[in-house]
Length: 125
Image 1 (cartoon, rainbow, N blue to C red):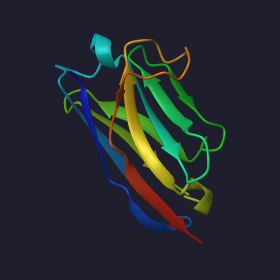
Image 2: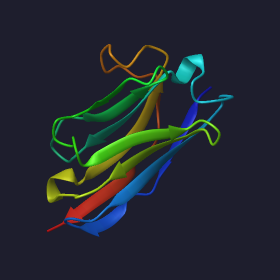
Image 3: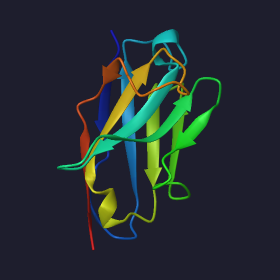
């Protein structure tokens, strides 16, 4: 059973940076079948959940238009950890951020089998 634990959230001022981490357990390494696709989602109060970024084991990466050029998704297979580097943060980035994983390639849909508990990011103006 894959377990995901996020960390790194916090409160920053607009223009600041944060790096979120998602530690995966229950897998030998991140590119195993159950975690071929890993992604970051966010959800702000009263808004729908949004996929922020995704990374596939074959190297394919995607970003939401709202974060392109500001956020970078990466992973360290040796540490079984997924990251989201967030720069030039804006108040609109305020949300709960979730890590997710699944076996299906990232290109197809947004249904994920495994989810973390979330980490809060708050950006003040």
